[in-house]
Length: 285
Length: 277
Picture 1 (cartoon, rainbow over the protein chains, first blue to last red):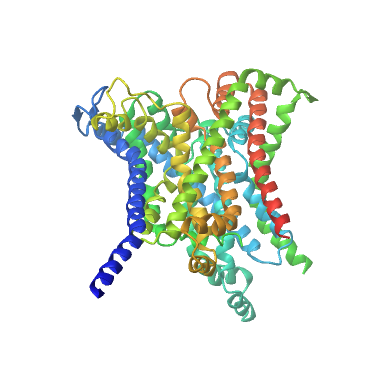
Picture 2 (picture 1 turned 90 degrees about the vertical axis):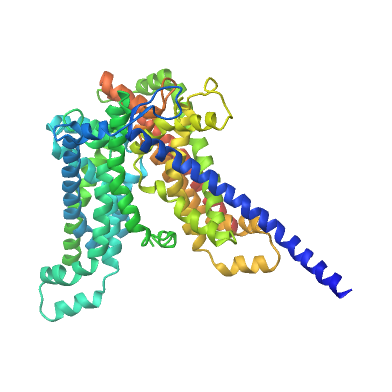
């Protein structure tokens, strides 16, 4: 009698667990399909980078090899040239953004700033409108100044695009600094510039570094603005990728894409520890 | 004090000047150029844009709407699984996986999809190899479905990040109370979580729409043939004809599409506030 009720109990417990057990496998199936869809395109890209010959209806390349890697990393190839152009533009863009957004971020971090919300929204606007039309008209505007197809023109376009990140993150970084330290420094007789560079800026440095990385990546990956303002004189990596892909030169396009992926993935790994979804919920508050 | 405030304005001036000069001015100019000819108001550019590209406008609206809906469904399910799943392994794997495309540039995603979704791409090849299809049945997904797949693939990370952030910020006690009272996980999702994260969902979808309307590389690389998205038409109009008026008229339409969605979102959230107030 007792034994029967015990075995009944066990059966009951198993029955209770059953819907959970089945939902576990359902959830695992979801993850499996999700990861196949997620990694499929990435794997396809990787295969193309080491393909020499691949045509329909072969499921996999008929000839593998690194022939195109040699072609790409030849010092006289288009890729190395545009890699340098891309890096130069990205570094200059970071410089321009730093120069204008550090003072702006510092001023906006003070709650007493008149019209603070208005200024913050102003820097949000480049992200709130579809910017394709704007780039088109910037290109037309720059044409009048002779800025089209110049490095300066492209850097300016990238900077405006990156300004939202750099200003908003700088504001957050400066808001987190201790105002008492700043006041103490001023009371001890330090000038405003000395205080800013020796007391305030070092405290905000990590946040400002993060904004620099964001701006750098955004500039490296920017396509639309460069397409209108820079082409055909300035060839950045995304533009090279585009033209290689449109010519059907998938190997070169895929290797270029892989080069563009490297900084993104590095950054992803670095920021994975810092970027919790919970933090994003607090952004802008 | 007055002097101090003036000093602060000088600190903002360079950044504000840059945005005004290189964003606001071209933005206003595009609106002006869309509705004027030699300084006189006219609707002829908009007429011409509608005459030539009305099919593409419809196509764009449909692509955006379908992508936004797919994004909403997928990112809510992933975020809900992360928040509610009792299995730590599921939460861990999903939490890592969904963020992968976050920093992958659109142009790289477009190139990946251009090869992945093609007639001889890895996707069709996998179907053929598993015996689900013969090589002759394979079709290329490059076109409207490819554009949607690429947008969803890339934007999913961003919208899920926002939504799961909102879910994580919710008060845990409510969920636990509901569970103690015997509510199923599905009921908790629809009854307690979704109403509270609706604002974040709206923001994620509106920002995704703006992104989809500004990306030029995806429609140009994935959308082969006609109809195509109006972003590709704008580039074509400018590059081939130097016709800024019609291109700006199309730009005006693209603002309106985004504004329409933003308006829908605002109205919805105002309604919700009116209901609770």
